Length: 126
Image (cartoon, rainbow, N blue to C red; front, side, top):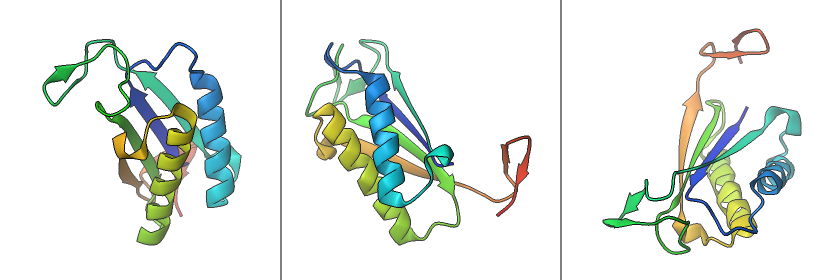
């Protein structure tokens, strides 16, 4: 953990989601000094026409509307400052890999609490 889940409308045809998730994971690992084996990044697409923003529907990801939605799930032991750095790191790296401005990225942080996570075959406590 952390888990970074990205959702967007389909991006332009030359966008490589597999490469982007790998690049975002690697950069986040380096910037946050978290070993890569503890980081997971996923990218899912909304079906074209299944995302309304400002009462508008789009089939592909606009640059200035329909914000990319990102959920960050991470342990609750991180300080507010560290969480802020995580959010900023994710926004910058997603922006760099998509060409979407960080002004059009929404990230929600969710805490995972000790004793409430099952991983590697057991309940995890920290």
